[in-house]
Length: 226
Image (cartoon, rainbow, N blue to C red; front, side, top):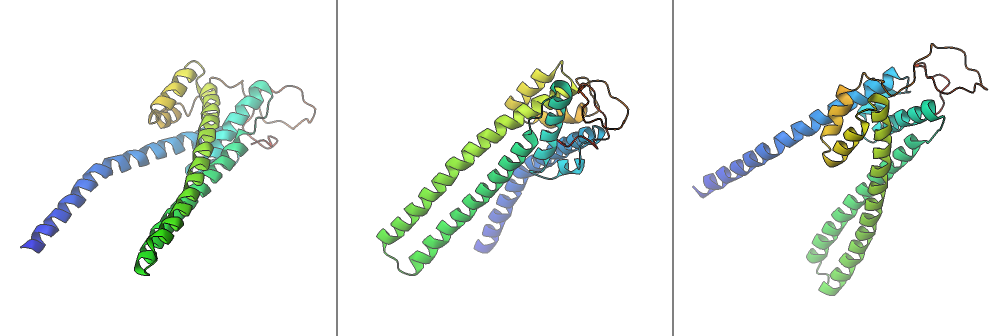
């Protein structure tokens, strides 16, 4: 009877956890798909190289940054290279996050092995404190990278919003910052708009000394910044 009761408690706990996490998981997947579809459609229509990267975590920063760089280039003639900065910060954040996870597992393993091997409490405490200090340093580094990445990402996102719908771009940005779940919907439902982009031009041979940068084409062949 005790065994049956414990099994019932375990099943109930698992069911409760599933009910709690399943909606969040479904919502997370749905918003990720909407965001990827939006970025992919915009990038493909505007001639961004490798638009499929919009579906790859971290690599989607490259697509977002490329769209921002394209907007800055065709509207202001400037190359901001946000795509490179975002990708570097995204990779760095991932690497530091993995390092933090590995170090946390190492601390746990060392504590278990130390207690089993009869290591003194003082030696164990010294070892754990040293590893925790290292984790704290990584946490500070990770937080700094995440803040920098978020700032540049929102700057790039604002450029994308301005290229899609300049009249509502500020509203979209504010809502994206305050209510992050709205961002994928803005990208998805505005993916076919180019209200903030200059008129398109037909594909024509590249003229190296061409002075005008107020028009754009979808071929992307001579837009090296993409």
